[in-house]
Length: 329
Image 1 (cartoon, rainbow, N blue to C red):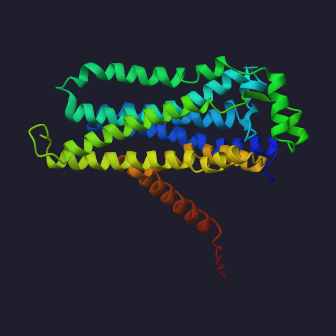
Image 2 (cartoon, rainbow, N blue to C red):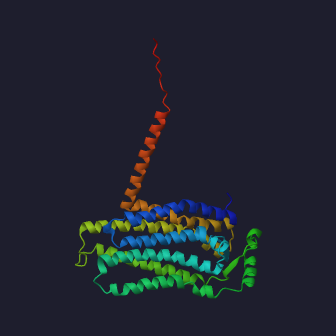
């Protein structure tokens, strides 16, 4: 399959959805019904992260299906929000860019929750954490408003884009191309949000590490509790690493494309195809890294193997030749 056409992008992302959705549903089942009670409030922060990943996944693969034309800051959506509901491209741009940082904020809040539950319940942080959570979600949905309010005149922007990308294919030119900006100042709020969410996560990771290794009075956790918390955090680190790899791996291509005015539609499509795998990868890592979910998977696999053996045994018995004996009188 050639991946440089809108049809190839749409079909590939839809195929990813077919495989990802059952896995997402199984992940929800594990979090809601198989999470042990000793994981406490972490259960709902994990559910929040998993739900955020699902929404971003569906945003890429079903709802919006963005076709971008780097190095230009433009493209058009191919998903059901356009084809079924007629949702404006500008709203979809805002939605997808917000969903990226909804996931990032959910990651930061897991680390904040662990720090608060283990070490900060009796500190001033309990008064400020609500403001911290509110501001993170506020900026998540508000950071892109300057770009949304300063969209250039589309006729002028398209003329600029056609000069910037003279080899733009006709089948893409014939689509409803929308140009968000003709310069790259819109990256400033995006980079601000990236720094805010990454900084928040690293701050609480550092605080957790310092307190767990501390010998002061605040560190009154038992060694068994600290061991369990370290295992839990390692599992979350694995999930975060996979998400970061899916998001960051295509970034060098995007940067090079913008800096050199290089256009390659297959490369542009691969940016979102690679990004769309974050949902599958994140769920698989979650099921593998957390012991309670891993045991559920092992038990299901064991039962499936036993049923398969029983079915094979029945088939073999049904196909065994019957020996008839004739008694001669």
